[in-house]
Image (tube, rainbow, N blue to C red; front, side):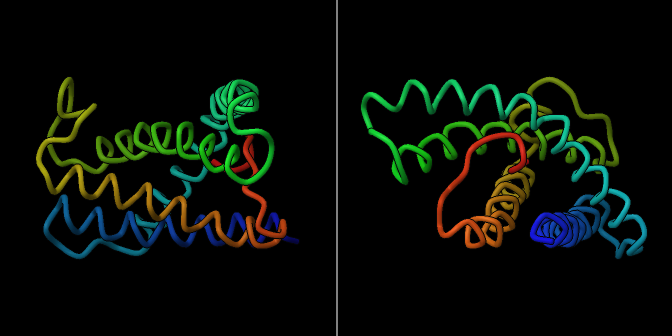
Length: 149
């Protein structure tokens, strides 16, 4: 049940942020269907990148154990070191999908303008905030691994 709630929260959060992204990139009110479709794409993208996240976070947690011990601090650092950069890539791909003009090179990696970069950073924040219900359901433990995509 918690997994369904988690996925539902993620889907709604992503769809809402992508609705705003469609508005930002196109300058007109998008349809809810388009935002929901992009929200589903973003949710599915998280499953794909989940494999990378699992491998990277496992490596980071293993290497942080010596310096930070075990527990909250280690998991928080691993979460920030792995999830934030991977989510930047995910939201960069979504920005390319939403952009009305071709995006490549520098613009794809770093954004076309400060507003684009702010939108991507907002997507990362939305993704992290949408993890809170799962973190709360686990008693405040910040898990690392595949399912927090």
